[in-house]
Length: 220
Image (cartoon, rainbow, N blue to C red; front, side):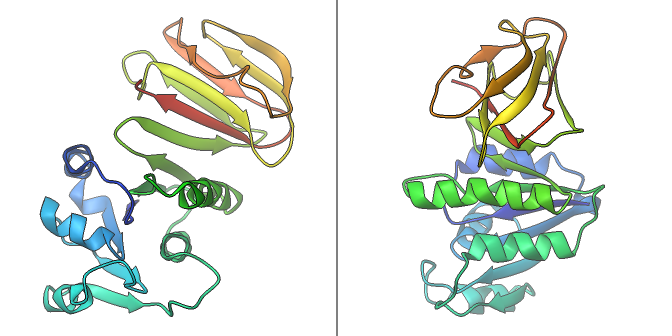
């Protein structure tokens, strides 16, 4: 199964629509969060579930969704998590480690939400799920020890590959096949040392021995 969560942040509808259309419809499970439902409507997609407290969407969005046959889950606006986190929790409940989860519409003008959504990638990682945060310019994942992030020439999302430690230092960083290779490196944060690397060989591999690593592929 491939779960796509469309949240209410900035959405490049041409990119997002193309991404969803390219997926196998038989394995797709589409969740819209609050205002993300309106983007799905404009792109011509019917979500399987709409979830949210509907504080940012138009007043009749839940009614329109119910009329269209979409399951609607209404959240209390006074809560300790975001609509997107609630959607991710739902996705984790309905998937296994063999499935993929994509977060779209999770970047934009609210930096607090962007940072919070990055943390959701980590929440998915700890639950054993591959979660990718995606927009028209960037792809973000996290890896932990025992996992290898592979970039193949011709299949990379973007030209630039950047890595960052998340919630603590990363040790035993190895990056092979890149313009700036790293062997048994350690990154503590508070540095731009590992920004904007580039694939040099046909395939690049990234792995670590300790910590949690953010990997970002960027187009520009």
